[in-house]
Image 1 (cartoon, rainbow, N blue to C red):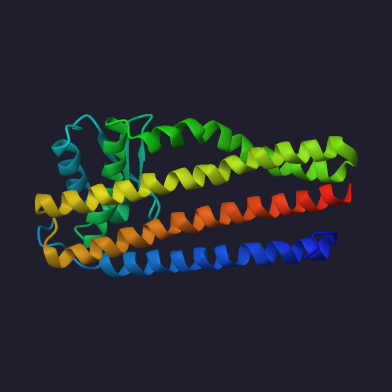
Image 2 (cartoon, rainbow, N blue to C red):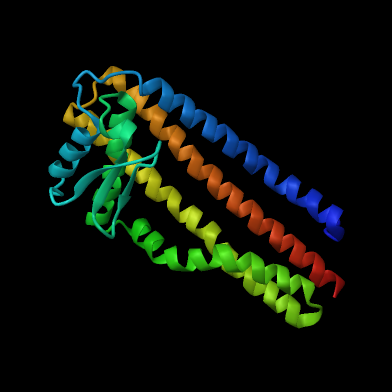
Length: 238
């Protein structure tokens, strides 16, 4: 397949990105569906997401980690810099199965931070380079394509390498998210916060959330592959 010309390059991009795009749309649909369904099902214990998080954190010696409410929907996250767990309103106040799973998952990230979980440390170290690479990489790549000769090729290669940091970041994120969900499921079951008939709901919510990260990694990798093929096509013509 030729990668020359606007039409050929555009078609190549569609062919490479379409599977990842469809996976992303499917993942988003699944997380919305799972969250909507299990946010309406109350847990037997009746604990809110904030109460679940507080118990899990305290149980793991993290009573110093604060829990705050944050605006938005599914904006829940753990901030390692300030050691604050932020839960969206729909999770913070809700005694639902979905809220319990999400709160426990985010608490899992706080635990990862406290035990110096390897992949989390690597991901945190990569943040500055990813911010630069995701913005400057594509620009440098495009400028390099516009410049003829080896100078342009070298610029494109540097741009590709910079942008590749985003794909690597997405890959490193996967074990971080999977591990946090595993910690959440195990603790919820062992602590008695979630009863056996409610565990399936927690699993579906967290597994569908994890799928969004898989889709994100696939999209990042497909873009890197597209850039690489464009660059190979240029090199073969020089």
